[in-house]
Length: 310
Image 1 (cartoon, one colour):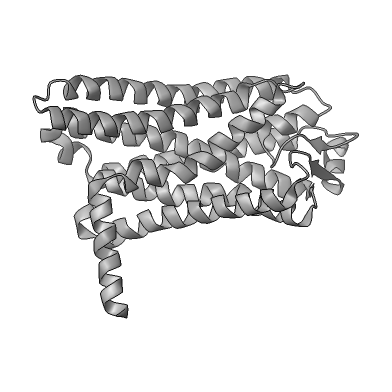
Image 2: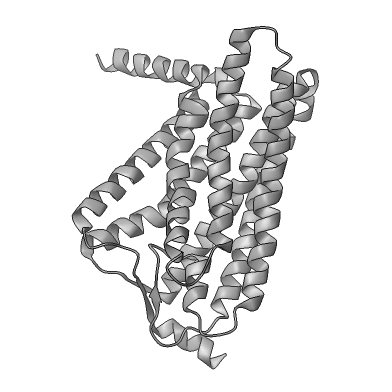
């Protein structure tokens, strides 16, 4: 334990940033601003518009709030590092960032599966939709997602805290995550790798298979729709959701089970950005801002604000 406690007095160095810090700073600031504004806009519209008080929009509002938290774990710190050029991060701050990143990521994995199940019930079993997806059940599902995310993050953080980090502590990444930290550990990491594989299956591949099954059934139901316009509209929505979900889960799975040494680690860095940065940015656009009801509500709110300030 003495070797473990010694790590608290040393900093890590984040090595993922290139030298073009001004351009990187502008890009990170733009992405973070767009992510926060997009998700908070969607969340606010759903809260104030009485026409959007259905289970689907309840889950979408939870996803929007979650994505604001998710992006806020990494992007502000990345922006500060890029502006100042200071790549140092203390052990305590590194573990804190790791905890919340894993927590929000795991929660989103499960929440996306819940949202797919909600769409399955709405399209394939519409007569019982209100009964199955009542407010109580919806609340329990969201709380369950958060509890699983918290437990998963606690487990990973404690296991990382027990690792010994000796010698040069250069993290080949933009922020603190499980796999980059395991790469620089000098103690045996076999048990952590086993846990990563197990967790990836239960929090990654299992929800993804549930989503795939839900969408297969949804598409099967859509094919029975006689209206060509109705089929095109439903397919357009499903395909958009499926693309985002596939990118999120596959990059997330690779992020925690990819190569942890050598030149291939650059692929892990890219997958982390797709998993933790791009998804929160795209979710408001894919899930909400292409939705006619949300666009109508947004137009109504903007018109009302314009009239009040005129």
